[in-house]
Image (cartoon, rainbow, N blue to C red; front, side, top):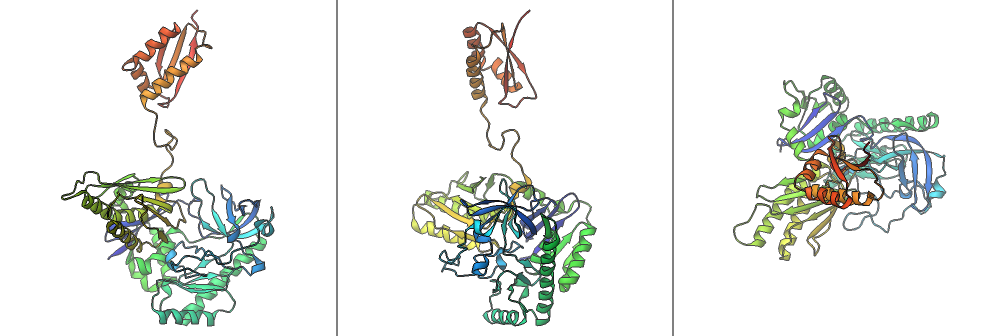
Length: 517
């Protein structure tokens, strides 16, 4: 499979698309705002401690206050036991097997957590060194952790814990053991390290150089924490361009093409310093048309924002984003099958799986995801659909956990969420329906107007009633729904005069009494 990174850096935003055999599978957007701040390290100040939630709000200089849970706070009394680690590169594939796990490779709920209460760890006004574990999403502020992790090209430094981990994607047991022993023997302090996927086959010399670089960087951060104002940014993660090149080029992409001369030079400089053998993989786009148009990506991005996605068989899926979860509904649509209903349902469900996994990855959907497959009577078919979904999700770098199909035909799954979904990044709530997604029907609006005028009739003393409404509602009241106006005039013994108001919301109306001289 040929993979390439297409970087559009000409314009007010930077867009990085990962293509697999010409099909876009991931999209990263950087707008130089607060949407992509995961991995940044700040000097913050505790604004408020919430014992009831065992959390605290922290001012780190963003528009929204960030928050930190007690289990993400280093407790000096327990030597900072590591319950979980957030990697600032947001790449779950490079997270080592950390801490006690159960058979399903999940963190064991019986593992010791931070037993000290949040009010014993923090007081209001206290300065803290924190890292963003998850960027702000919607109305939720950034999530913080005091377990710092600083990613390099080959290693991730975790200065607050004593642990050595190896990327799960390095599968050779002999190589894993070699790397672990090498890192333990070379580290000068009891800092934790994770050897990233790119570190496979790493020499002692390169490990030493990267360790020195990361340790010096950590020392600078600590020094700046003592002198910097509060709140302030102490360390900023790489730009989306350099982060994508660092994390994807070595293993997930064969080529990088960039349209901006300035960004092209910065990427070349970065690669010459950290990844010289991959210099030939980077090229500058010389075409006349915009780079995303040349690769036919704009249409794919536009379709990724639609709720309905058609399947080749004629069925379709509906994707709905809510505040708490994502709901995906599978439907047979135009597909009627050839033999029996059960076979039609099974084929539609199986075909939807590949598209669902693709859309989840492209749209960067995270958190709780509920998939409503079409009901299947046979248990064997349910297992076939479930196993197929689990298998296709293994290609996703973000961590997923999938539960078996329930008796109601639902699949509950979770996917690690670190940044905004594509929908939240590129869209905003409709100013017309205020994000509801639906409007009152025109007939309902007319009936509401009727009831509101009756409600106000006792207070209206004028000889006439002026009714200002949206032009479409005015046409309806003067046409098909004219019986409403006739009924009102007969009941109130007053004339109702309708005025179209082009600037009105379709649900808006204004009732005013008119006195005649």
